[in-house]
Amino acid sequence: MTRKRVLVRHERSDWSDWYVDKLSAEFPGFDFRAAHTPEETMELAPDTHVYIGIGPRMTPALVKAMPKLEWIQSLTTGVDNLLTMEEMPRGVPISKCVGVHGPQMSELALMFMLALARRLPVALENQREGKWERWAQSLLYRKTVCILGLGSIAETLAACCSVMGMTVTGVSDGRRQAPHVDRIYPRAALKEAVSEADFFVVLIPLTPETRHIVDAEIIGAMKPTAFLVNIARGGCVDEAALVEALESCAIAGAGIDVFETVPLPADHPLRQMPNVILTPHIGGYSDIYHEQCYPIVAENFRAFAEGGPDSLADAIRL
Image 1 (cartoon, one colour):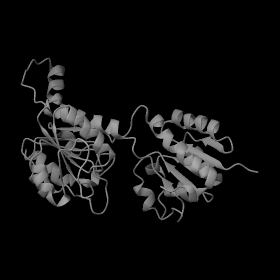
Image 2 (spheres, one colour):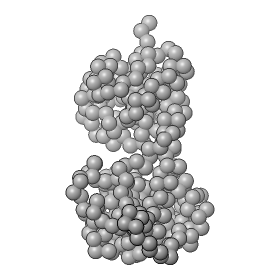
Image 3 (cartoon, helix red, strand yellow):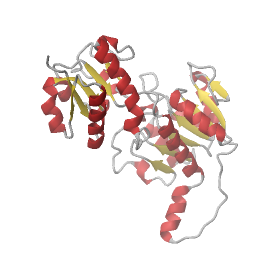
Image 4 (cartoon, one colour):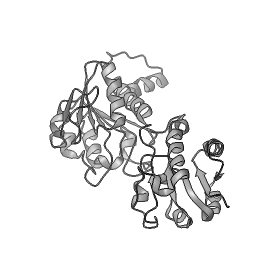
């Protein structure tokens, strides 16, 4: 009997090989193949039954080239592109890696908050120029952080902030309480919630309802000494309104990992602002990400091996 082919394509070739080695040892009844280039991926696609890879990097051409496709295991949480792709076969389950991003996302949020509060960009510029300048360091201690969206990542971040002596508030329509969160506001009270915050962290998923949920009105409700941190999705924040608020010093600054246009254009005004710190969408990407995701991949693969595509209870089906 011909073994079903499983194609693994990570943006890091060594991680593709790592997954193939691990999964082959655990599930010897399948034909695991690693693809290291787009060309190799397309070459192996026609006989592929299972695709394990970065969901947002899957193109319509690749999906169309896999007529035998039975299941997609994305190594990301976001699969928005697959859910709107016309070429995606109806009924093919799409699994995600959720619940693993808390540590790296929380550390990035804390990095933004600390660096912005302590004016790290100014200190680095002074270092380059040989300038000696001292100023009182603004602490996170006794500050208030408001987190929009109270999922598993927010729980990790709230715990970190609480340990640092911060007051933690949250905005959610789905929860009335959460660990380490002192107060929870409904989305209808978002303006009130952000008006109290020294740091406003956006962690809400992007949906039609949450697109530009942080608009000019919400940004305008923030204190002029407050910082906005967006590590969710670029579309959750009205970027033009944010640029205007930063240019007019209506808020103190921003830390941004996600953007409405990716990659961020080289001439984008955010790149030139001294009160802004940018990172290239690295919030969920850790140096041990393959190890973090593997238990989810293995558990899902075990279900697939035993019961086929219908056994993937948590998968999304179009």
